[in-house]
Length: 461
Image 1 (cartoon, helix red, strand yellow):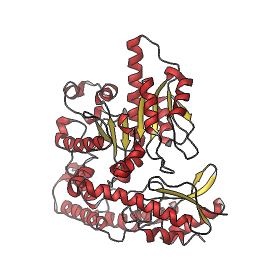
Image 2 (cartoon, helix red, strand yellow):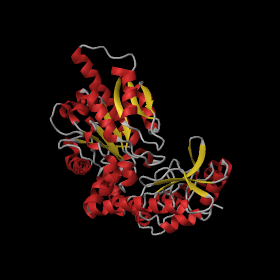
Image 3 (cartoon, one colour):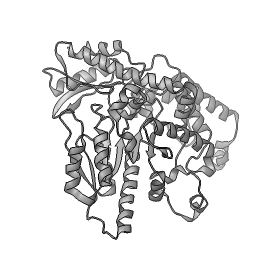
Image 4 (spheres, helix red, strand yellow):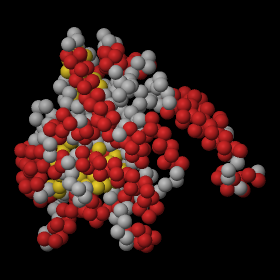
């Protein structure tokens, strides 16, 4: 009972502490070095209740039992997003260097919200952000912050955009509109509608062309309809469902002419700009006021990391810097404080695993890995087009391939998907387009091979 009155015992360096750290690091080492990554699958709530309940007790169950419970019950009930057969949603394929360094980030107890407390980490993160900004064609002086994911990145950028519009109205003595409006494609990511709901603003969608690509003329018509109420346009640098890149150059020309903020949501696809032959598809990104790209998608970093970059970070500082007496030391300095650039205050140094991996491997390996995904998508699309019973829904532009099994019902797709997972062959869930149930390969991992994909296609009988 005495132990219940010794809270510092949990933090003391004891033999038990050494054992706990060893147990955790041993599992982390084994998992990071798996050559045959398990796919695994979810369990029913009743199964987990039977196998894993009761772990939180008065005295604790000890590190050995806790890590055993995680390794043998809880982890196998989670689908491994880095498995080469994980082809749903947008997979993750972190490098071993990034995975290992993520452990270092946690062990180092770094607070990365301010320069005062985490200048070394912030400097390293900024090295990555400046490299990305240059790759995207943004001017010198562009900068930003790593946030949790694309949803937070899009929201933070749009909050800054509205703040700019509000300040412009105040300077001109003009009243704000009754309802602000964000303009985007009908195929924009769902996070744009989510951001609008949080901000209590409206979304006006512009129709894309039949191939799913948004153009400047469609944006111009919607902007003309909403006038000064429209404070931002969102272009997509690689839609999640199809990997389609909007005609960003023509959209940028329209927003520049009307002095409207242009945000590019490149959470998935903007990484393709690392590949020289793909850059023409992204013409105009360098004109954006803000962009995002998620390293935990196609830049081979662990969850969770979104790079949010502003053309002019000063406008983000104005919009996001939080004021409080206890923060005066930070907010009254000229230091680069990442927490002043997005909606969060507390933040971990989530850009460091990417920094370490880039520093370790070099940028050319990243270019090659992204290029490999694009090349494989084109190859498997050609294979699908040549197989009886299968047909492409659209030609792939990046590394997403959408196709159908001719004659199948939604129930057929769902049963096949479940069987594929049960057999541990792959994780491919149905998607939909224009009311039709379809299948979709999202190819990210360099471990995903042509043989992996053709083996999955062979089961579509």
